[in-house]
Length: 390
Image (cartoon, rainbow, N blue to C red; front, top):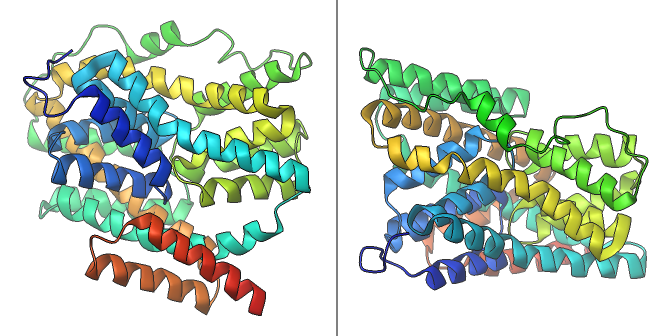
Protein backbone atom coordinates (compact mmCIF):
# COMPACT_ATOMS: atom_id res chain seq x y z
CA UNK A 1 0.00 0.00 0.00
CA UNK A 2 1.29 3.42 -0.88
CA UNK A 3 1.66 5.98 1.88
CA UNK A 4 -0.13 9.28 1.92
CA UNK A 5 3.24 10.99 1.30
CA UNK A 6 3.21 9.67 -2.25
CA UNK A 7 -0.52 9.33 -2.85
CA UNK A 8 -2.48 12.51 -3.73
CA UNK A 9 -5.56 11.34 -1.84
CA UNK A 10 -6.48 9.37 1.26
CA UNK A 11 -8.41 6.14 1.33
CA UNK A 12 -11.24 8.00 3.05
CA UNK A 13 -11.37 10.53 0.19
CA UNK A 14 -11.50 7.71 -2.34
CA UNK A 15 -14.33 5.95 -0.52
CA UNK A 16 -16.29 9.20 -0.22
CA UNK A 17 -15.82 9.84 -3.93
CA UNK A 18 -17.24 6.45 -4.89
CA UNK A 19 -20.10 6.83 -2.44
CA UNK A 20 -20.93 10.10 -4.21
CA UNK A 21 -20.58 8.56 -7.65
CA UNK A 22 -22.80 5.65 -6.65
CA UNK A 23 -25.39 8.10 -5.30
CA UNK A 24 -25.45 10.67 -8.12
CA UNK A 25 -23.84 8.94 -11.10
CA UNK A 26 -26.57 8.43 -13.69
CA UNK A 27 -26.12 7.16 -17.22
CA UNK A 28 -24.85 3.60 -16.94
CA UNK A 29 -21.31 2.33 -17.60
CA UNK A 30 -20.54 4.70 -20.46
CA UNK A 31 -21.28 7.80 -18.43
CA UNK A 32 -19.79 6.40 -15.21
CA UNK A 33 -16.47 5.58 -16.91
CA UNK A 34 -16.52 9.12 -18.30
CA UNK A 35 -17.17 10.63 -14.86
CA UNK A 36 -14.22 8.71 -13.38
CA UNK A 37 -11.93 9.97 -16.11
CA UNK A 38 -13.15 13.55 -15.77
CA UNK A 39 -13.05 13.63 -11.97
CA UNK A 40 -10.05 11.49 -11.10
CA UNK A 41 -7.74 11.96 -14.11
CA UNK A 42 -8.48 15.42 -15.49
CA UNK A 43 -9.71 17.45 -12.53
CA UNK A 44 -8.34 15.96 -9.30
CA UNK A 45 -5.34 14.24 -10.91
CA UNK A 46 -5.51 11.38 -8.44
CA UNK A 47 -5.06 8.78 -11.19
CA UNK A 48 -2.72 8.92 -14.17
CA UNK A 49 -3.97 8.56 -17.73
CA UNK A 50 -1.94 5.33 -18.07
CA UNK A 51 -3.46 3.79 -14.94
CA UNK A 52 -6.95 4.70 -16.10
CA UNK A 53 -6.36 3.09 -19.50
CA UNK A 54 -5.06 -0.08 -17.84
CA UNK A 55 -8.17 -0.25 -15.67
CA UNK A 56 -10.50 0.33 -18.61
CA UNK A 57 -8.74 -2.34 -20.66
CA UNK A 58 -8.90 -4.88 -17.84
CA UNK A 59 -12.58 -4.08 -17.18
CA UNK A 60 -13.39 -4.56 -20.86
CA UNK A 61 -11.51 -7.86 -21.14
CA UNK A 62 -13.06 -9.42 -18.03
CA UNK A 63 -16.69 -10.52 -17.69
CA UNK A 64 -19.02 -8.48 -15.52
CA UNK A 65 -20.09 -4.83 -15.13
CA UNK A 66 -17.52 -2.47 -16.65
CA UNK A 67 -18.03 0.55 -14.37
CA UNK A 68 -17.82 -1.48 -11.16
CA UNK A 69 -14.65 -3.23 -12.31
CA UNK A 70 -13.06 0.06 -13.32
CA UNK A 71 -13.88 1.48 -9.89
CA UNK A 72 -12.42 -1.58 -8.18
CA UNK A 73 -9.21 -1.27 -10.22
CA UNK A 74 -8.90 2.43 -9.41
CA UNK A 75 -9.24 1.56 -5.74
CA UNK A 76 -6.47 -1.02 -6.15
CA UNK A 77 -3.98 1.39 -7.77
CA UNK A 78 -2.72 3.01 -4.55
CA UNK A 79 -4.46 1.07 -1.78
CA UNK A 80 -4.36 -2.50 -3.11
CA UNK A 81 -6.91 -5.05 -1.85
CA UNK A 82 -8.38 -2.81 0.86
CA UNK A 83 -8.80 0.07 -1.57
CA UNK A 84 -10.34 -2.18 -4.24
CA UNK A 85 -12.77 -3.69 -1.74
CA UNK A 86 -13.89 -0.41 -0.18
CA UNK A 87 -14.13 1.40 -3.53
CA UNK A 88 -16.28 -1.39 -4.97
CA UNK A 89 -18.57 -1.52 -1.93
CA UNK A 90 -18.91 2.27 -1.79
CA UNK A 91 -19.78 2.41 -5.47
CA UNK A 92 -22.45 -0.31 -5.39
CA UNK A 93 -24.02 0.29 -1.95
CA UNK A 94 -26.02 3.50 -2.64
CA UNK A 95 -27.80 2.15 -5.72
CA UNK A 96 -28.34 -1.19 -3.96
CA UNK A 97 -30.17 0.60 -1.11
CA UNK A 98 -32.26 2.64 -3.56
CA UNK A 99 -33.23 -0.44 -5.57
CA UNK A 100 -34.23 -2.37 -2.44
CA UNK A 101 -36.44 0.53 -1.33
CA UNK A 102 -38.05 0.66 -4.79
CA UNK A 103 -38.51 -3.11 -4.63
CA UNK A 104 -40.37 -2.73 -1.34
CA UNK A 105 -42.61 0.00 -2.79
CA UNK A 106 -43.18 -2.08 -5.91
CA UNK A 107 -44.32 -5.15 -3.97
CA UNK A 108 -46.60 -3.06 -1.71
CA UNK A 109 -48.38 -1.27 -4.58
CA UNK A 110 -48.25 -4.13 -7.09
CA UNK A 111 -46.24 -2.22 -9.67
CA UNK A 112 -45.08 1.35 -10.26
CA UNK A 113 -47.32 2.99 -12.91
CA UNK A 114 -45.30 6.20 -12.89
CA UNK A 115 -42.03 4.39 -13.56
CA UNK A 116 -42.49 4.22 -17.31
CA UNK A 117 -43.34 7.94 -17.40
CA UNK A 118 -40.19 8.80 -15.45
CA UNK A 119 -38.07 6.53 -17.63
CA UNK A 120 -39.57 8.16 -20.74
CA UNK A 121 -37.82 11.41 -19.83
CA UNK A 122 -34.81 10.05 -17.96
CA UNK A 123 -33.94 7.52 -20.66
CA UNK A 124 -33.73 10.29 -23.28
CA UNK A 125 -31.59 12.50 -21.04
CA UNK A 126 -29.30 9.58 -20.27
CA UNK A 127 -28.61 9.18 -24.00
CA UNK A 128 -27.46 12.81 -24.11
CA UNK A 129 -25.24 12.28 -21.04
CA UNK A 130 -23.57 9.14 -22.33
CA UNK A 131 -23.11 10.68 -25.79
CA UNK A 132 -21.11 13.51 -24.23
CA UNK A 133 -19.13 11.09 -22.07
CA UNK A 134 -18.29 8.94 -25.10
CA UNK A 135 -17.21 12.03 -27.03
CA UNK A 136 -14.87 13.15 -24.26
CA UNK A 137 -13.32 9.69 -23.91
CA UNK A 138 -12.85 9.45 -27.66
CA UNK A 139 -11.22 12.85 -27.97
CA UNK A 140 -8.88 12.18 -25.03
CA UNK A 141 -7.82 8.60 -25.74
CA UNK A 142 -7.87 8.16 -29.52
CA UNK A 143 -6.26 11.42 -30.65
CA UNK A 144 -4.88 11.53 -34.18
CA UNK A 145 -3.36 8.04 -34.32
CA UNK A 146 -4.71 6.52 -37.55
CA UNK A 147 -4.44 2.93 -36.32
CA UNK A 148 -6.26 3.64 -33.08
CA UNK A 149 -8.87 5.57 -35.07
CA UNK A 150 -9.35 2.57 -37.35
CA UNK A 151 -9.75 0.20 -34.38
CA UNK A 152 -12.19 2.63 -32.78
CA UNK A 153 -14.35 2.90 -35.92
CA UNK A 154 -14.41 -0.86 -36.55
CA UNK A 155 -15.49 -1.74 -33.00
CA UNK A 156 -18.04 1.08 -32.95
CA UNK A 157 -19.54 -0.17 -36.22
CA UNK A 158 -19.54 -3.78 -35.00
CA UNK A 159 -21.33 -2.81 -31.78
CA UNK A 160 -24.00 -0.92 -33.71
CA UNK A 161 -24.40 -3.80 -36.16
CA UNK A 162 -24.51 -6.72 -33.69
CA UNK A 163 -25.81 -4.77 -30.69
CA UNK A 164 -23.35 -6.53 -28.39
CA UNK A 165 -19.65 -6.58 -27.58
CA UNK A 166 -17.15 -9.26 -28.61
CA UNK A 167 -14.14 -9.99 -26.39
CA UNK A 168 -12.21 -11.41 -29.36
CA UNK A 169 -12.47 -8.05 -31.06
CA UNK A 170 -10.86 -6.39 -28.04
CA UNK A 171 -8.10 -9.01 -27.82
CA UNK A 172 -7.48 -8.78 -31.56
CA UNK A 173 -7.27 -4.98 -31.40
CA UNK A 174 -4.71 -5.18 -28.61
CA UNK A 175 -2.59 -7.76 -30.42
CA UNK A 176 -2.69 -5.89 -33.74
CA UNK A 177 -1.66 -2.59 -32.19
CA UNK A 178 1.06 -4.33 -30.17
CA UNK A 179 2.39 -5.92 -33.36
CA UNK A 180 2.35 -2.57 -35.16
CA UNK A 181 4.20 -0.79 -32.37
CA UNK A 182 6.65 -3.45 -31.21
CA UNK A 183 6.74 -6.34 -33.70
CA UNK A 184 10.22 -7.57 -32.70
CA UNK A 185 10.00 -7.16 -28.95
CA UNK A 186 9.32 -10.02 -26.62
CA UNK A 187 7.20 -9.52 -23.54
CA UNK A 188 7.85 -11.39 -20.31
CA UNK A 189 4.54 -12.53 -18.94
CA UNK A 190 3.67 -14.77 -16.00
CA UNK A 191 4.21 -18.43 -16.82
CA UNK A 192 0.80 -19.36 -15.54
CA UNK A 193 -1.74 -19.52 -18.36
CA UNK A 194 -4.85 -17.32 -18.08
CA UNK A 195 -7.12 -20.35 -18.31
CA UNK A 196 -5.31 -22.03 -15.41
CA UNK A 197 -5.51 -18.82 -13.39
CA UNK A 198 -9.27 -18.56 -13.93
CA UNK A 199 -9.82 -22.20 -13.04
CA UNK A 200 -7.79 -21.92 -9.85
CA UNK A 201 -9.83 -18.92 -8.70
CA UNK A 202 -13.32 -19.90 -9.78
CA UNK A 203 -15.84 -21.70 -7.66
CA UNK A 204 -16.27 -25.33 -8.72
CA UNK A 205 -19.98 -24.60 -9.01
CA UNK A 206 -19.42 -21.71 -11.37
CA UNK A 207 -18.74 -23.76 -14.44
CA UNK A 208 -20.75 -26.82 -13.50
CA UNK A 209 -23.88 -26.12 -15.49
CA UNK A 210 -25.26 -29.63 -14.85
CA UNK A 211 -25.95 -28.94 -11.17
CA UNK A 212 -29.53 -29.29 -10.03
CA UNK A 213 -31.28 -26.05 -9.09
CA UNK A 214 -34.20 -27.71 -7.37
CA UNK A 215 -33.05 -26.76 -3.86
CA UNK A 216 -33.52 -23.65 -1.80
CA UNK A 217 -34.58 -20.50 -3.69
CA UNK A 218 -31.71 -18.46 -2.27
CA UNK A 219 -29.26 -21.13 -3.40
CA UNK A 220 -30.78 -21.05 -6.87
CA UNK A 221 -30.47 -17.26 -6.94
CA UNK A 222 -26.83 -17.38 -5.81
CA UNK A 223 -25.87 -20.00 -8.37
CA UNK A 224 -27.70 -18.31 -11.22
CA UNK A 225 -26.46 -14.76 -10.59
CA UNK A 226 -22.91 -15.96 -9.98
CA UNK A 227 -22.99 -17.50 -13.44
CA UNK A 228 -24.38 -14.24 -14.82
CA UNK A 229 -21.59 -12.20 -13.21
CA UNK A 230 -18.86 -14.61 -14.30
CA UNK A 231 -19.89 -15.55 -17.82
CA UNK A 232 -21.50 -12.46 -19.38
CA UNK A 233 -19.18 -10.11 -21.26
CA UNK A 234 -20.13 -6.59 -22.18
CA UNK A 235 -21.22 -3.68 -20.06
CA UNK A 236 -24.49 -2.39 -18.67
CA UNK A 237 -27.49 -3.76 -20.54
CA UNK A 238 -25.46 -6.60 -22.06
CA UNK A 239 -26.54 -8.77 -19.12
CA UNK A 240 -30.25 -8.14 -19.74
CA UNK A 241 -30.78 -10.83 -22.44
CA UNK A 242 -29.02 -13.39 -20.23
CA UNK A 243 -31.19 -12.44 -17.25
CA UNK A 244 -34.35 -12.55 -19.34
CA UNK A 245 -33.63 -16.10 -20.45
CA UNK A 246 -33.10 -17.34 -16.91
CA UNK A 247 -35.36 -15.17 -14.77
CA UNK A 248 -38.43 -15.19 -17.04
CA UNK A 249 -38.09 -18.19 -19.34
CA UNK A 250 -36.14 -20.83 -17.39
CA UNK A 251 -37.05 -20.27 -13.74
CA UNK A 252 -40.23 -18.19 -14.20
CA UNK A 253 -39.33 -16.11 -11.15
CA UNK A 254 -40.83 -12.99 -12.79
CA UNK A 255 -43.33 -12.33 -15.56
CA UNK A 256 -42.60 -10.16 -18.59
CA UNK A 257 -43.92 -6.93 -17.06
CA UNK A 258 -42.06 -7.41 -13.78
CA UNK A 259 -38.82 -8.01 -15.67
CA UNK A 260 -39.23 -4.86 -17.77
CA UNK A 261 -39.98 -2.88 -14.63
CA UNK A 262 -36.78 -4.26 -13.10
CA UNK A 263 -34.77 -2.99 -16.07
CA UNK A 264 -36.49 0.39 -15.84
CA UNK A 265 -35.62 0.62 -12.13
CA UNK A 266 -31.96 0.08 -12.98
CA UNK A 267 -32.07 2.84 -15.58
CA UNK A 268 -33.73 5.46 -13.37
CA UNK A 269 -31.41 4.84 -10.40
CA UNK A 270 -27.76 5.93 -10.25
CA UNK A 271 -24.78 3.61 -10.16
CA UNK A 272 -24.20 0.45 -12.22
CA UNK A 273 -27.09 -0.66 -14.44
CA UNK A 274 -26.43 -4.26 -13.38
CA UNK A 275 -27.92 -3.37 -9.98
CA UNK A 276 -31.20 -4.47 -11.55
CA UNK A 277 -30.24 -7.93 -10.20
CA UNK A 278 -30.94 -6.69 -6.66
CA UNK A 279 -34.45 -5.61 -7.66
CA UNK A 280 -35.06 -9.01 -9.24
CA UNK A 281 -33.71 -10.77 -6.16
CA UNK A 282 -35.97 -8.69 -3.90
CA UNK A 283 -39.07 -9.58 -5.90
CA UNK A 284 -38.16 -13.27 -5.75
CA UNK A 285 -37.02 -13.65 -2.13
CA UNK A 286 -37.17 -10.32 -0.31
CA UNK A 287 -34.15 -8.55 1.17
CA UNK A 288 -32.15 -11.77 1.44
CA UNK A 289 -32.78 -12.41 -2.26
CA UNK A 290 -31.55 -8.93 -3.14
CA UNK A 291 -28.34 -9.47 -1.15
CA UNK A 292 -27.70 -12.90 -2.66
CA UNK A 293 -28.34 -11.71 -6.23
CA UNK A 294 -26.03 -8.70 -5.83
CA UNK A 295 -23.29 -10.79 -4.19
CA UNK A 296 -23.48 -13.44 -6.88
CA UNK A 297 -23.26 -10.86 -9.67
CA UNK A 298 -20.54 -8.57 -8.35
CA UNK A 299 -18.20 -10.96 -6.51
CA UNK A 300 -16.87 -12.68 -9.67
CA UNK A 301 -16.22 -9.21 -11.14
CA UNK A 302 -14.24 -8.33 -8.02
CA UNK A 303 -12.15 -11.51 -8.31
CA UNK A 304 -11.54 -11.02 -12.04
CA UNK A 305 -10.26 -7.51 -11.30
CA UNK A 306 -8.06 -7.83 -8.21
CA UNK A 307 -6.33 -11.05 -9.29
CA UNK A 308 -4.93 -9.76 -12.63
CA UNK A 309 -4.40 -6.24 -11.19
CA UNK A 310 -0.84 -6.90 -9.87
CA UNK A 311 0.23 -8.06 -13.33
CA UNK A 312 -1.28 -4.97 -14.95
CA UNK A 313 0.49 -2.82 -12.37
CA UNK A 314 3.81 -4.63 -12.83
CA UNK A 315 3.88 -5.10 -16.58
CA UNK A 316 1.57 -2.30 -17.73
CA UNK A 317 4.41 0.20 -18.29
CA UNK A 318 6.30 -2.18 -20.60
CA UNK A 319 6.17 -0.71 -24.15
CA UNK A 320 4.68 -3.87 -25.59
CA UNK A 321 2.03 -4.20 -22.89
CA UNK A 322 1.28 -0.49 -23.15
CA UNK A 323 0.70 -0.86 -26.89
CA UNK A 324 -1.61 -3.82 -26.22
CA UNK A 325 -3.56 -1.81 -23.63
CA UNK A 326 -3.82 1.16 -26.00
CA UNK A 327 -5.30 -1.10 -28.67
CA UNK A 328 -7.81 -2.64 -26.27
CA UNK A 329 -8.69 0.82 -24.93
CA UNK A 330 -9.39 2.11 -28.44
CA UNK A 331 -11.63 -0.89 -29.06
CA UNK A 332 -13.37 -0.41 -25.71
CA UNK A 333 -14.10 3.25 -26.40
CA UNK A 334 -15.35 2.32 -29.87
CA UNK A 335 -17.73 -0.20 -28.29
CA UNK A 336 -18.86 2.43 -25.79
CA UNK A 337 -19.56 4.88 -28.61
CA UNK A 338 -21.44 2.21 -30.54
CA UNK A 339 -23.51 1.47 -27.43
CA UNK A 340 -24.72 5.08 -27.48
CA UNK A 341 -26.33 4.42 -30.86
CA UNK A 342 -27.79 1.07 -29.75
CA UNK A 343 -29.30 2.54 -26.58
CA UNK A 344 -30.45 5.61 -28.48
CA UNK A 345 -32.52 3.50 -30.86
CA UNK A 346 -34.37 2.04 -27.88
CA UNK A 347 -34.85 5.22 -25.86
CA UNK A 348 -35.39 7.91 -28.52
CA UNK A 349 -38.75 6.81 -29.83
CA UNK A 350 -40.41 10.10 -30.84
CA UNK A 351 -39.85 13.82 -31.31
CA UNK A 352 -40.12 14.55 -27.57
CA UNK A 353 -37.40 12.11 -26.52
CA UNK A 354 -35.12 13.23 -29.36
CA UNK A 355 -35.60 16.82 -28.24
CA UNK A 356 -34.78 15.94 -24.60
CA UNK A 357 -31.56 14.18 -25.68
CA UNK A 358 -30.47 17.09 -27.90
CA UNK A 359 -31.22 19.67 -25.20
CA UNK A 360 -29.20 17.59 -22.72
CA UNK A 361 -26.20 17.55 -25.06
CA UNK A 362 -26.44 21.31 -25.65
CA UNK A 363 -26.67 22.04 -21.91
CA UNK A 364 -23.68 19.82 -21.09
CA UNK A 365 -21.72 21.35 -23.97
CA UNK A 366 -22.40 24.98 -23.05
CA UNK A 367 -22.66 24.78 -19.26
CA UNK A 368 -20.00 22.33 -18.14
CA UNK A 369 -20.56 22.81 -14.39
CA UNK A 370 -24.24 21.87 -14.33
CA UNK A 371 -24.50 18.62 -12.29
CA UNK A 372 -25.93 15.62 -14.11
CA UNK A 373 -28.40 14.76 -11.28
CA UNK A 374 -30.11 18.10 -11.85
CA UNK A 375 -30.55 17.23 -15.53
CA UNK A 376 -31.91 13.79 -14.61
CA UNK A 377 -34.40 15.33 -12.17
CA UNK A 378 -35.61 17.82 -14.79
CA UNK A 379 -35.94 15.01 -17.36
CA UNK A 380 -37.95 12.89 -14.91
CA UNK A 381 -40.36 15.78 -14.34
CA UNK A 382 -40.60 16.36 -18.08
CA UNK A 383 -41.39 12.69 -18.66
CA UNK A 384 -44.19 12.73 -16.08
CA UNK A 385 -45.62 15.91 -17.58
CA UNK A 386 -45.51 14.66 -21.16
CA UNK A 387 -47.11 11.31 -20.31
CA UNK A 388 -49.91 13.03 -18.43
CA UNK A 389 -50.79 15.37 -21.30
CA UNK A 390 -50.53 12.77 -24.05
